Image (tube, rainbow, N blue to C red; front, top):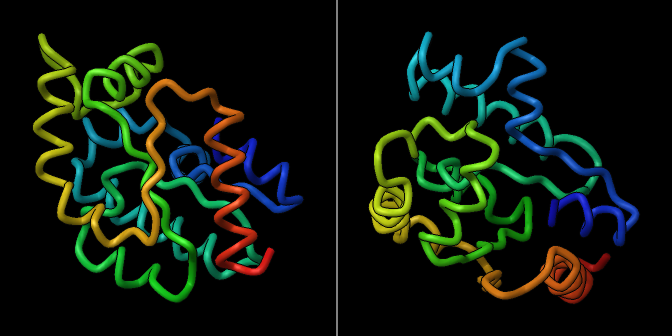
Length: 156
């Protein structure tokens, strides 16, 4: 939602990587994980980001796991303004829960699982050019910060 809002304000295209993968594969992320495994999903995700970067400048929203895979952050450097939207694990888990599309959060305690995931990915997120805290902010407030960053650093 934040990415769409920022893209609209910038007059730029928006790519939700999860939506692109689901459309290309004709199945939900949960099913891709179940039938093909996480490595296959991560490869599809990587390709979708590369395709988005090859198009006209816009806002690209990969999932949080994208940044923690291989050399994705290095690939993005110089091609994109990479921004980490930070949040507390419990807030992130609550935001993801209504969708039910995050197989890595399956289990009795999604917030504890999210804490583990964020701890494991923290080093990758340090490669972002900017960190924008999202807790206690509306979609519009976070999007406004992204728009400001894009205009100041990327020449929008």
